[in-house]
Amino acid sequence: MARMRDPRIKKCRRLGLNVIGLPKAMKRADNGQARNNRKLSTYGIHLLEKQRLRAYYEVMEKQFRIYVKAAMKDAGTTGDSLIKRLECRLDNLVYRIGFGSSIRQARQMVVHGHILVNGEKVDRPSFAVSIGDVISLKEKSRKNEMFKENFLRNPVSAYPYLIKDEAGYSGELTRLPERHEVPIEINDQLVVEFYSKIM
Image 1: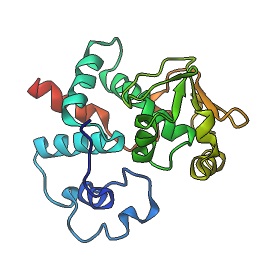
Image 2: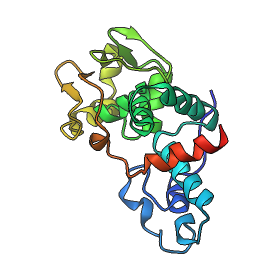
Image 3: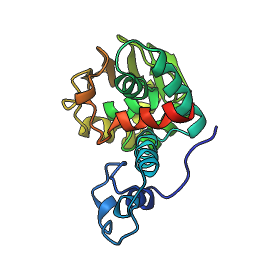
């Protein structure tokens, strides 16, 4: 499985945006290395925004294009549809619910078989979670102190489209997220414009 392996903090500084949520990620961000500190062409601005969105969800370019193509066929705004599709990936929701402290850790948990969807093991990080699906931690994995601490420490009150059951070590997607509820600083219209020119 292809995945992003580059240093996360260095990537944040290069993109000029904290895409991993770590407070220290932007500590030395004003050293002139960020792309947005330079004068960019229109193409460069669109490209930077696309790279930022990919970095938020840690999706490779080939797979990201598949999401964009699918979003373009959906009814409604393409940018909103793209964000909803990315937000409903299993690895992302495992992170949002609080099982993993980062999206990379959440993805590893999925791949290693620690996560169940409606009681069945799913080991594909890109699995599209549907409304009403219950994501839970495997019974044996609940003994892992790191997973337990992550889950009990992280509230999901910031995500109104999710409910969390601490007793059952699970979370449920109750509805599709609205664009303003997704905590990412992205101008998705620029991403759509970027792909509309090259696809």
